[in-house]
Image 1: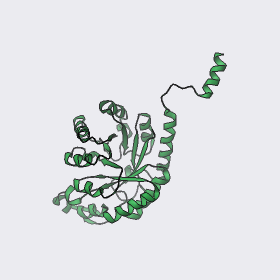
Image 2: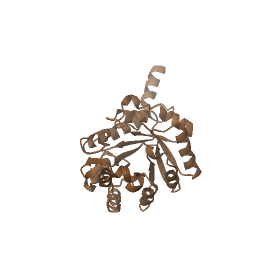
Image 3: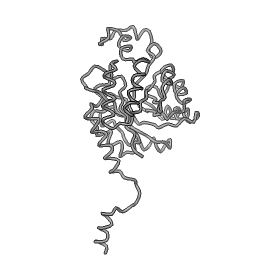
Image 4: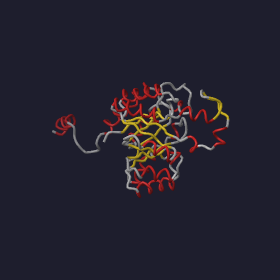
Length: 274
């Protein structure tokens, strides 16, 4: 089964639909299977006190102005939906509240995503699981007990899902990757396990395939120097192309695991064993 590769646009579009489309183009040209966004209802996710607090951004001087500046609404998502269909690319989004998840239902999406930060939000987990769409569940910042509970909820709703090993630091140091945890997650829950990475470069993500990852998700950007909290932990279009190429190469190298002699090895066998 081919590794499912997700270009995580998230909020790296900076509230600009033209940037979002350029990132969709980059993902399609690189050979990604899907792109992913993030959706929030600002007044639900954040408190009024927080939203009124100061923050300098391209949109103003408060947290509210920054959060609202980064948020796409129906007009933008209608355009994204049409553009991804035109490109033959799947898209989906990680919702940060129940209302945001309900908003996403207006689109015929094949996949859902639980962000690491939302793994402990049982109301949101139940809302997502009730849709019974294939769901990628990131496990960054989470204890075994918290993952156990999320898995229990998705199994209660008979919703298909895949866990994603993740370290929620931006950017992540390579020594924190702990890719052996992919196998442990697979053994503990008996499900497919992917990798959601926030490191710089592509080596860790490629190695995750050798560790058994069935999906790979990476934040993507047009330029890491752009405004935004996720930009530095993202990869640019040329790196994305290289990542997809190297993942496909890794799949070939890993092989099927079956004990089959190639024609070349058969020829050597005939020569050396007579």
